[in-house]
Image (cartoon, rainbow, N blue to C red; front, top):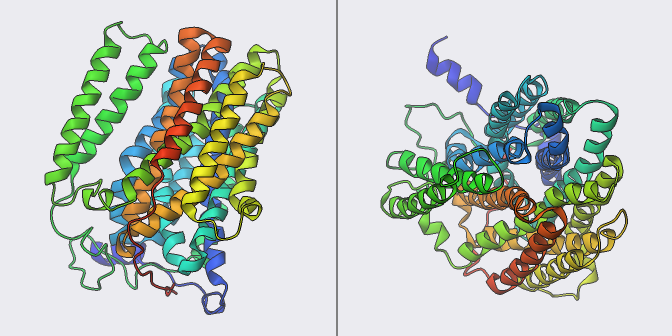
Length: 491
């Protein structure tokens, strides 16, 4: 078998069984499969946020070093989401999505066996490659796989699956750390990943009628409709994006106690600013820019991406900060995990059925503005109340409910503004904004605690988050246009 034939066999997408493909509700089976990947990714994020203190004790490392177990994953994710989205237009989204499950599961197995902190960080970076393959395609698979009238509901279900993963993460992480080992925090991903491969193989429709082979002309029109075609891959843009993100997070880690020279933080901030300016210039002139300025400049897309970043910043800051504050108040790790679980649990509930409490006819813009305002109120209450075993419960529920209204509606606004043939690239940009928000939500609490102590620094961070929520209210904009969307038609 020659190389072309082997590539054709490996990259070919298999259709669903006829009985499944012909069922009129089959698109919800595909949504369920995408939700499994969303659940897995956020389960890992929720568990990792709680296990960081345990890793610091095991490896005898400071919090500024241990946080890179989370940040390394997020940096690779940010760097790969957009290019993987482009590659998925060529190879096929189903192929890339299933490959993501496989890479994620294998890397999770290696992460659990890591014998040193920086080996663990490296394994997490490999794990992020699989995460990028799943996340870059998740929104696109939902947006293109369901009828247009059901998209908001489908995206809400996907957001609920993410919220469920986040909700189970802290409590499950607390149980595993206390009664087993931190290694099981990563090994638990392996059986879920294997099940995801089987489910996707049978339940996801194929997104290409035939396999794409590198170097072979593709004339079936299955690519990105001008987004993927023509020109060289924007490697310079990818390197600038990765460099700018890495320099910014290293600067925050240096200010948070990472053992680097004192002048390093200022130098890294300057480098991040210069690299960002270089990225803007590069994306304007590149033939195939990874950030697709044409899409970013579509009315409604740019503010929508900013709101997605802010939403995940608001979601992850309390997840990282909460265990530190509760541990300082003498709350056991298992109980702390259960308290922190209330935030993503309320997020998942609101993303699924929260809209039932709102007046009929409310637009996604109305939902976004209300959700951001409610989330800000919850974070403000959290900042003003004393820290204890039970007092954060109410504010966490309020903040989670607001975020559950905000994020699915905002995702729907962004995806409606993006042409259907660019949905994979657009979905990659949405997920990249999420990941940047998650990275900042991981780094900023560590910085606040390092500079001002757990109680005072935590309160300052929460007050700043409440102010950022007000900014999100002001940023929400209606989509500039609603392009026609094709009905799901893949087998």
